Length: 114
Image 1: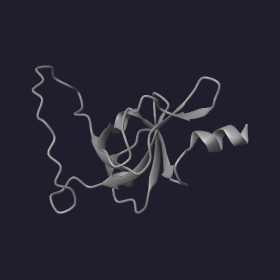
Image 2 (image 1 turned 30 degrees about the vertical axis):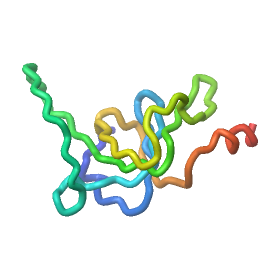
Image 3 (image 1 turned 45 degrees about the vertical axis):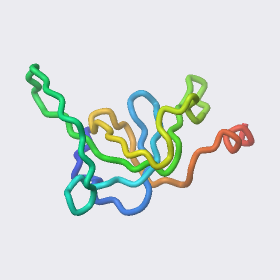
Image 4 (image 1 turned 60 degrees about the vertical axis):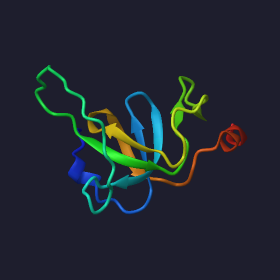
């Protein structure tokens, strides 16, 4: 199933996004229209032609990203890739799951469950 930006860009509250690379991002989806988010992204000139222009969503991180390891444990990423409060873009084609966020993933909480 392919996600479309319109399917979830108007979400209210925090979301959890899992990517192809098993990275977990948690935060608030931001609209890129001027009245919602005045973030300017650098323009990169690419000479290759793409079948479809990639679509991105903008996420304001409310937690540090985590990764799902090969043994199915979840850990925050060290050294930090991004920090809480960063605004990032995620390619829609790389999203494998999206849903509500139940709070930040904490290594200590994960270790207690094991």
